[in-house]
Image 1 (cartoon, rainbow, N blue to C red):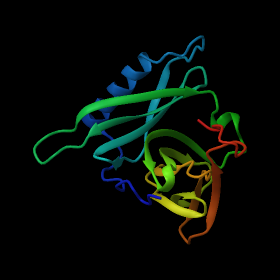
Image 2: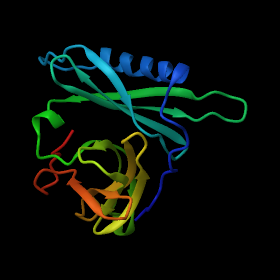
Image 3: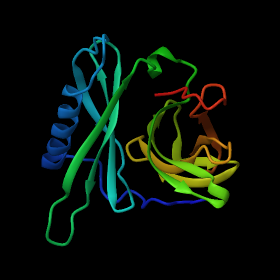
Image 4: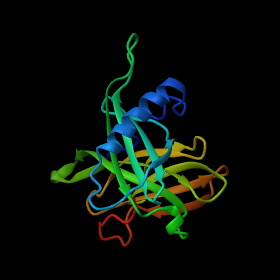
Length: 204
């Protein structure tokens, strides 16, 4: 299976004009979001997470609470800048959830995830390449890891208490588990992406 398939974060968290440009993409996607009969309310401050690059595209995830206590989550994807060009072909994917950390006091990690591609292995088995981003709800964390069948398939050092992972999931019935480690290598927290291990999405 692919391990450490994505480039580690290359830039600081978005700020200045670049943050404004990303925020415009996010806000357009929110405006176009079909929430059905759900009254989401107005988006509050956008929180950005570390970038990850895979297959030539860079992903910068984000979350934003709303005034009606929902959470918007998604990412801006783009072609990274070359030697003489700015980032281009920006697109944004956004969704929403009512499952927030405030409503789930038992969570140790506040996670969001989206499948962004696939990887085919032996015998036609397919892994869902999954972008996972979030922040710890416990203190002292230094590194977040993604583990599949007991094997570490990605890791990310926390940047301003935030992390982004990109890892294979749901491969031959094995499912991702996200772990948080402290500076001495001690495990501080762990969360599955699934509520009960049956493959049904149990988080954002």
